[in-house]
Length: 135
Image (cartoon, rainbow, N blue to C red):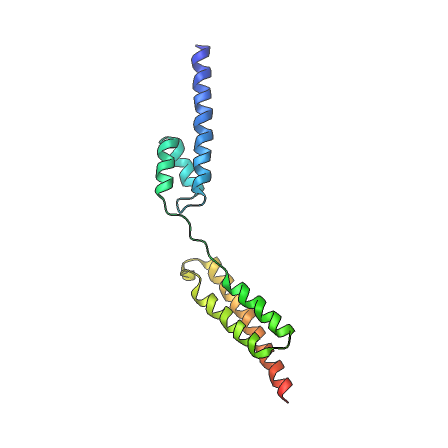
């Protein structure tokens, strides 16, 4: 009896460990860690792994607006105001077009709006500097 319980306990431990590994595979996929882990525990780690691997990979978002803002700040430091203005406008364009449907996610919507306001303020300051330099 003791040998049967020991072998069942070992199988259970391996089952949970492999299910956890399936969950780790799922964290980079649309299905996510929790659903992968749940399916691996409920069905089996092997079936959970197959389902997880058939799930689409998460889309990574490239934050191109950050590069444009950095470039604008560099131009602004060098007092190249027209180039800085173009880079800030590029950053606004990237914020408008690089994020997939931010209306469905209020956190992303808030972050995008905050960044847009920061860039618009920088553009206003830059326009003031350009007007002051022209006088």
